[in-house]
Amino acid sequence: MNTCQSRAKLKVNNIEKSFGDIKVIKNVSISLVENEFVSLLGLSGSGKSTIFNIVAGLLKPDSGHVIIDDEDYTGKTGRVSYMYQKDLLMPWKKVIDNVCLPLVIKGEKKKDARDKASSFFKLFGLEGFEYKYPFQLSGGMRQRAALLRTYMFSRDIMLLDEPFGALDAITRAKMHVWLQDILRGLDTSVLFITHDIEEAVFLSDRIYILSDKPALIKEEIKVGLERPRKKEIITSDIFNSIKAHIYGSLE
Amino acid sequence: MKKSANTGSNVLALILLGLLMVIWHLIAEYSRIQKFLPSPAEVVNTLVEVMPLLKIHIWTTLKEAMIGFFISIILAVVIAVFMDNIKLVKKAVYPLLIVSQTIPIIALAPLFMLWFGFGMLPKIIVVVLVCFFPVVISLFAGLSSVDEDMVNLLKSMGANKLQIIGNAKIPASLPFFFAGLKITATYSIMGAVIGEWLGGDKGLGVYMMRVRHSYSYDKVFAAVMVIVLLSMVLFKIISVIQTLSMPWQRKNTEV
Image (cartoon, rainbow over all chains, first blue to last red; front, side, top):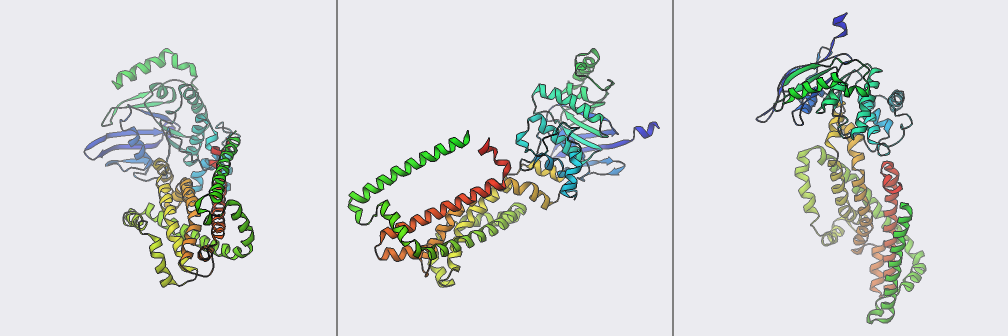
């Protein structure tokens, strides 16, 4: 039972990557089990995004493997989707068509794809915006749409690369609560990149702390905070002690 | 809000136009060159007078211009897409495109008559030569303007090249494409007229040559006015198509 519950969804085994003479990633191994929220926490420019590109299949590692559901996906795109701080919504497509784009690319008919996608608009708080263009949405709403698109593409694993990095602090805090709430209703595992310690602690089940250049995993932290977490938790003692520990580890 | 600002600027342009007309009128009436310069009112009168005769010439010129225009677009799209997708093609073709624009077409055009006769073909060729460059350059710039991250996102979704072109590259390049088309639409009429100057039996250029030889400068100006109007109408049509085909850009005009 126990093994079944904690089945590894995604495993990154000993990947290494250099660009020219510069080693960017050194022997990084990551695992993600079903329904787990795992963060990679590191300084800006520490190679986090390179790890993501490798997991997404856009980059090939020099060595090591990316295993998803026991299958080797090293250097193969089309299995997991990712989301950036840039929402990358296509300005020329209505929100609903942006969201169902992954389905259309997989070959579904536009109408079927729209039907499938539209059933999620309520859950994602996007109801009523289906036929608007992205420029008519606020930054927070655009990120919601981008997340929904990510979810439409691969429902079981999502890579989120500083998705809220471009939002103001207040909107970002709201998005954290929103994201947590929404994930409870979805069967999905999330790998999350951030350099924001508070964000990582609030959202994650586990955190990998990355060192700077080359990226290697310094420490793995289990965040034992109960879910659902309330906004106020970020001022609690236990939250602060985890934060303090991470600060120490990053230095 | 924006609408009233737009009409405001149109009013200004009209006032300026009126002012220029007055100056033109004064020069035509009172200067030394009055013999060779009909006044605006004369031109309009003449235009109304010769309109029945002009129709066939307008039709011919318009036909040449439009055929040339569409050939240019097709050619430009094909070349731009190839240049965008195959580096080798870009490296080979792009410099030649630039060089091709340094060739004075007006000097070559008479030869086209020798090679292709006095029919529509040499005129269409002139139109194509004049028109396709602005389209190809603007479209190529548009295709390369696509956010690389967006392309990568599509790739990560498993999109193939055609899907990337259709979903990202073409829509992103539309504003550039239309900017090129607007220039080209006006050039196309001019190209056809230039082609016709060099020989033929119909067309506004032919007509202009004829009436110039008979010193009917009012008729020359009437033909010029027709060319201006045609070009403006084409420009407007392209603008309307642009607005219709890019609803997501309307924020610039409507909000």
